[in-house]
Length: 422
Image 1: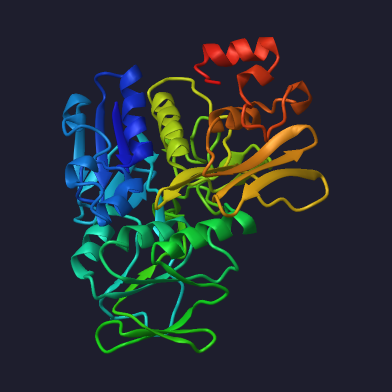
Image 2 (image 1 turned 45 degrees about the vertical axis):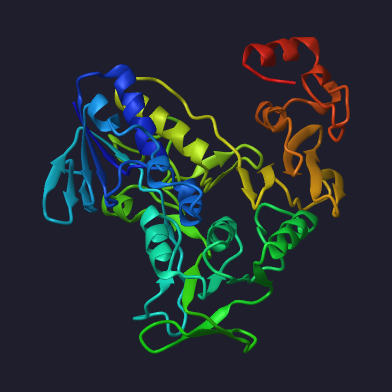
């Protein structure tokens, strides 16, 4: 059996491991346009800020490909999938044949049209390790950095740059930071926390023009404000990297469409990770869920099924566990509900920089924000995943002592057997 995997991150690694559980002898070829051994993308901001060295970046040991008998083709881009001939074409013209193919190409940065964007140096995106390496090489203590976007990518870039330069300004079109995963109160706490560390913010605004001869020298905002800068980071967001799937005739909406086995509309072609659309069980709709754990789980399912297994993907929901300058947060599911079918339970302390918010629909928890008080997050995510009726819970969700003891004995025993902690 000839297995080919396009990608080299969480979904690809999990697929290798999933295949090897069923098939010890089949040939696995892994193709990636990145030159690096598989690494952890969430660490690129820590690499930028010198919190993680090169040796700490890797997602698996250096002998991972050898141990799993994987032929790794690194630093070469796959440019076409010929699904009728079952071949993947590389940028150098080489063709790699497959019996089963996995597309695990992840996301690409979204860079909207902006006047003056073309042909200027010192303009970066921030999604890959090479982005972090290039940015680190150019920035110095006297740099003036503008970051477009106050989402997860933009704020992690700001955190990583904090010790490298003294002038970092984040420009965001929305009225708050992290607008897709936080509400106004939580976003305000995060913004003030980062401002105390030296990061500046301009909200309700965006860059309309980039100026400079040969390299960026300043940006002009939509309201006419001019910001001098010699480094510009475009961190507006990402989109599924579906170009290859489209060349193969695979069904694509926003992301690649897959069934519960992670197989696409084309026989013997599978997809997993950020490039796919996944069922969000909190809204019962297919959505892009660009989540590291979700990517790994999907990759494992795809690898298992490519090699004769029968694993099923039953959906997921948005969840982020992250922190900025020592301020931890975990968010999950629906956090900014619209409509009178939702109830909200919330406590927060602005001075102590903590917040707890729970969103309930009917009698089921469908989302939460935990900011600086992140204990028992696993229990809350379990409530969402298992759709546990809250009338069965003995204690209030907001109580600090909330834990497994709040569950009926039958459910508590099940959770403890699964490794849950109070």
